[in-house]
Length: 93
Image (cartoon, rainbow, N blue to C red):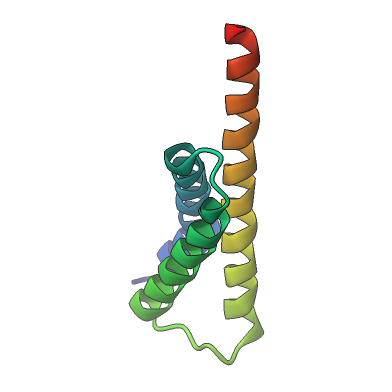
């Protein structure tokens, strides 16, 4: 994999995927408190998958910055799903 492709993968596509995963997890589990635990677990597993695929080193700060980005985008996706669900239910009433 070339450097440009890896850069594009790590900085754009993976956060978009985790954002979508957060949105999907929140919609599947609705208002259950377990959605946060499952969301973080999925983010961690997805992060380790990306680390394995791209041969990243866990001892560098850059790798952990990517992990923080994954968790943040997944939480944003979950919050967006909760917010849209809240407004959708208000409009039905």
